[in-house]
Amino acid sequence: MAEVLIEASGKKNVRIVEIGARAGEKLHEVLISDYEKEHTVIDHENYIIVLPTIDLPGLKQFYSHAKPAKMENFSSTDLLMTKEEIKQMLVESGFLK
Image (cartoon, rainbow, N blue to C red; front, top):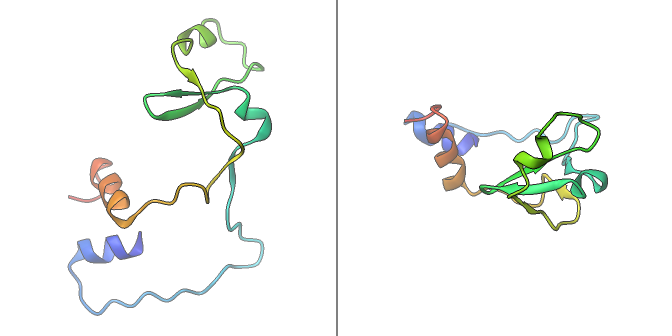
């Protein structure tokens, strides 16, 4: 992301210094756990966790059209974005022009 933002700024000779992980800093995170994967569906390319512990009338029916997500644990290291995907996300979110 730093490279995308530097390129978008138009500045030249900007140096990125990697300082490494800080004490206690997570290097990755489990985004969908073993328990949650049993209750996860895919709706318009989004993973949605419909937990049975949440008692909202119509919740399960609302997502009944969505297909179950067949997966193992889903971690932040599973799908890394390319520079172009990061740039596109920032443009679509209004952070870059």
